[in-house]
Length: 305
Image 1 (cartoon, rainbow, N blue to C red):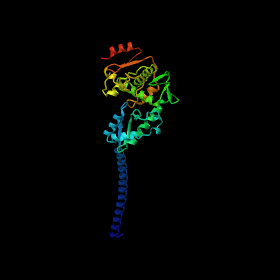
Image 2 (tube, rainbow, N blue to C red):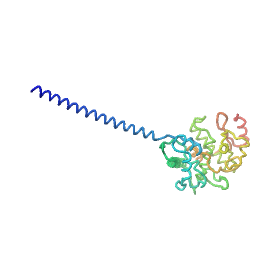
Image 3 (cartoon, rainbow, N blue to C red):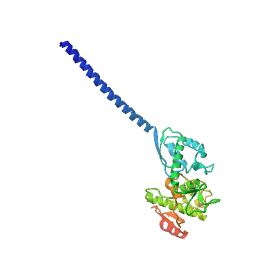
Image 4 (cartoon, one colour):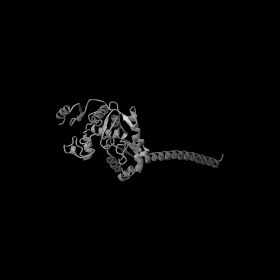
C-alpha cells in the first residue's frame, strides 16, 4: 500500500472519528440544553406564582390590604370582584344577607396564586376552599330544615327569632367571635388544648344565647373600636352598635373576621357545660371558667393583673 493511500485512509479515519465525536458532543449538548430549558421552565413557573398566607381571624380589609402589598392585585379590584360575586352560585351563601359582604367566607390559609392573577380568580379559590373546609367541619353534625342542630341547644335566642339551630351564616358569625376570643397555637396552649378551649368557649356563648343573655364579647367591641384591648373600657361597652354584644343580646349582624377550621368546628361541635363565663389570665393567657357571676368576679380579682 502506497504512502499516499495510507495517508488518505488515516485522514478519513480521523474525519470519521471526528464526526462521531462531534455527534456525541452535539447529542450531549442537546440533552443539556433540553434539561436547562426544563429547569428554566420550572423556575419561570415558580417566578410566575406568589405564595400568600392569610392569617386566621383577619378581616376582609386586612386580607385585601395584605394581597395588595404582595403585588398580586389591588384592593379596589378585590372589592369590585367581591361585589360581583353571585351568592346563588354558592350554597353556603344562601342565607347571607344581600347587603352583607363576604367577611367570614374567605378561608384563611396559605395559597399559591398567579403573580398576575385576577381578583376574581383569587376570591374563587378562597371561597372554594371555605366550602371544602366547612363541609369537613360540619361532618357528623345534624342539619334539619336549613339549621344545624347542636346537641343540648334546642332553643337559641337569636335576636328576634328563637331557633333550634344555627344557619351557616350564624355558625360563621359565632365562629369568628370564638376565633378572636381564644388563644392561638403556640401561645400557652397546644393545638389539642386550644381546640378543647374553643369548643368550650363556643358552648359558653351558646349557653348565653339559649338563656337570652348578652354574649358580652370583648372581640366584638374591639371590632367596633379597632383598639385591640384585652378588656374594653366601660365607655366602650356602652357604644351604640349592633356589634356591641354588651349592649345587644343575640348574635351581631355578621362575622367580625374570617374564622379558621378549628373555630368553625368548635361551633358545630360545642362542648356542653354549665359554664357561663370565662377569662384569660394576664399576661399568661391561661383560660379560667366560671358558672356564676360571683365565681367570675373572683377569677377577675385573682387572675387579671
